[in-house]
Length: 128
Image (cartoon, rainbow, N blue to C red):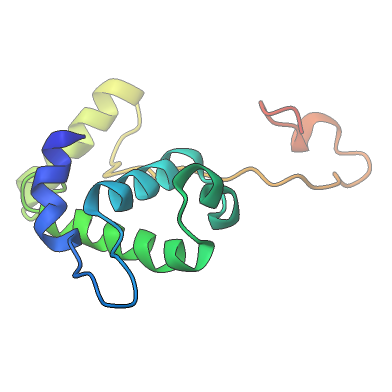
């Protein structure tokens, strides 16, 4: 956390005004990481962060943009050559036995009513 905060702090630091004190960078980062880790609503996060949902609606997207911009060169490298893509595909094939795969996207399970007569076809590991 401290290392990440040191990298992001210059971009997250805001000026105090005569009307209010700014929310410090460490609180902005904590709120954002808590949101990303839990997926809780801004309304729920206001209790654990002490920041209004309206402010969180501004702070969290801004902090995510800063995280991406600061870390993209070193930690969020996107493949730029055919060789890099081939290396990724090779890793997927060796690890997961999926050929010609350059990446994976997580899914979302949505509860539905299965059509009549489909049995276990619409049943998943989350038990719905």
